[in-house]
Length: 415
Ligand code: NIG
Ligand code: FE
Image (tube, rainbow, N blue to C red):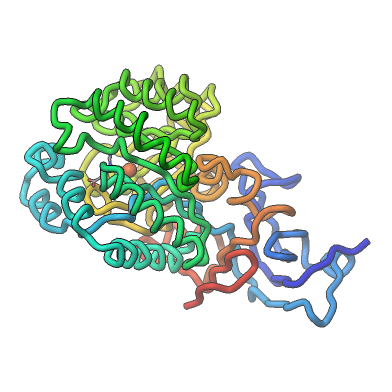
């Protein structure tokens, strides 16, 4: 029996499905002269253009579009972003350009706490507009699934406000939005020197409210020297898991504090940053179900050493790439730029970087059966590129050759 379709993309010069029976060692599963059929927003068939009519029913009602021999990839899955903030921090950026250090600025009351002050005093409209502005830039860069963290409120009212705004975005933008509660982003001023009490407050007061309202799937914690210790992260993640949340952690960003090991032991979906991960913990994460999420834009922005992508890949870890978009340490909403950085600075092959920015990003959000691949059953989120060789994607540094973006089989952006 032929497959029912309502949309078909044909004349695809190179289709990167990221899986299935054609999977090669890099995982991209490249099909040439390919076609892709969609029904009800999901992929129902992929194969060669020649085999299209034999396999798919093509009634007059089916919309047929030609990709003109160009490259098609899954949309990017940006599994780590912080777009809910009251104001940008270009002043701190300029201070760093003049020689100040990110951690110095933070310990003088700037950094995350600066954003907290501005977020608490911002109106819902300002928060919403800032977020929507950047989600739309992300879309124009081919990102079709975005994780959105709260974490610049650090009190019950503002965190709830931010997560409600993130939840509403799901109906306002074409992308799939995955909200994460990051009340454990920093110790707020009112809990200064009482970080254990703040963790208690999150566990006993804020988490249960968020759980009850069902407005975040994940929790996240910043495990770092001067922020939360590995013990505090372990305690917070264990309690959150018991409350029914899935887990993420900002780990080993500036110092190796054992955050990656905390993530593995807690059964976290991902451990993110890992600029300073130890060789021992590279092995540990590689043998686990925790995804190692690398954010090379942050290393670039903060003039830090790039994360050890090659070592993690060679050890066999599942490695995702994401932007870490936020007003302080990485004001970058472009996944194509992140893919270029992974190739140019972190030892990824082009194929590995594209796989990490799509299929592995989906795994970091526990959406590996729905997002990041173009196979039957997956959401029809894809990008038609203005090029005929997929290696052009990271090669064209800083200027993505994007022609059209589709979410759930619907055209949502074109140049
Ligand atoms: O992921 N590392 C912690 N949090 C953010 C930075 C936030 C900020 O500077 O506002 C990050 O890099
Ligand atoms: Fe982050």
